[in-house]
Image (cartoon, rainbow, N blue to C red; front, side, top):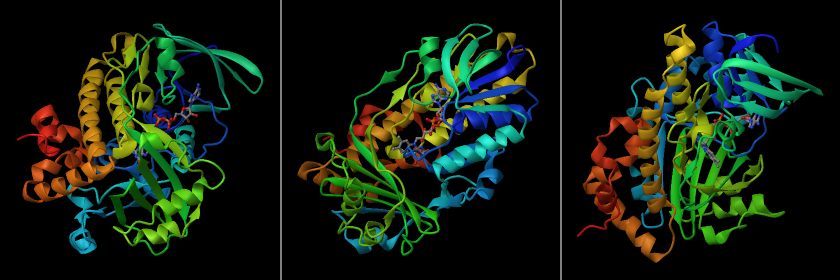
Length: 414
Ligand SMILES: Cc1cc2nc3c(=O)[nH]c(=O)nc-3n(C[C@H](O)[C@H](O)[C@H](O)COP(=O)(O)OP(=O)(O)OC[C@H]3O[C@@H](n4cnc5c(N)ncnc54)[C@H](O)[C@@H]3O)c2cc1C
């Protein structure tokens, strides 16, 4: 392990790291994956892959694997709201097969199971995979080196390319001196898994806002639903303490969506964890000998649920660059950086607009939502950021990502 120079050493064996390991091991490259955890646990992470993300999953050849592992497609969406009557909200559910040809809708799969499925497949594809690794030192250079302990022994490995796939707090990003830009948190975002929700239509996703809470519900099949809720920054600790899980379930009892009572009556199947909702990004997610992918390269506000889609696109683009040539002495990751920067800028815009509409509370925000729903019914371009979320941000003209468009959507122009 320590004598050879690996083609790739990947720090982090979650979605980004394992997916890239599979792709490159299948292409005949020598790959070493270093994963910190011994077991993938529910940290309340992404379990919903948008239709454009599913297309990326297909393009990297992992779709059949995920479906075989229990991936569950959703086919309809309803937006509830305290300013809409239920009949209006339920009259015309949005068909989710309309966004990407050949994709029936978003794909849901439990996060720890998703990670384990990819990690196992990376091993099967020929990657060397280690768990319980403690990274001691990372030396980014043309032939980067990583020193770590594993099972009580210290090793130093070297690679032609080091991949940082180690998530939000990336040690590789830190070692490579790649700055992380972050915008201000907009609201809190909590999530939990619920079991026993057998009365909820398991192909239907729903969102809605009422009072001081905005909910999202994504069924995973067999009565299991991943639920999320947005609430104001001033309500720090709203879902903390010994009754947190049941407090969170009770928050789903909303008049605007009567079916939510089935969720509220379900059983917690994991922790409830709250995160600050914000965006982050890196201007250049690479340095000589080092490339960042997935959350390590910067993440999108989870309110629009695109971290997995972003990650799979990173894996596709980086693996295409690596497969293009055998000569890795002059690899050019600039096209990856350029595409990612514009992709994240557009998604930041879409997330910020979504947060302003769905996750602001009080009378003023309520009146704005009512006005938005009425105006968007007459002018669908006002809700077109939803198309960027479902079909991919590159599929809209640039004028839909401008301050002028934002002002128009929020009714701030005369
Ligand atoms: C509340 C919330 C809800 C979300 N919902 C969605 C959603 O519905 N849809 C969606 O697409 N996205 C969603 N996301 C985002 C999505 O979960 C992430 O974008 C995605 O998990 C990124 O994958 P990753 O592999 O880059 O990072 P991670 O999933 O964070 O994986 C990083 C891996 O690296 C390992 N690691 C970390 N440090 C080290 C180290 N020093 N050494 C070795 N290994 C290390 C970790 O153990 C882990 O296995 C959500 C995120 C949050 C916070």
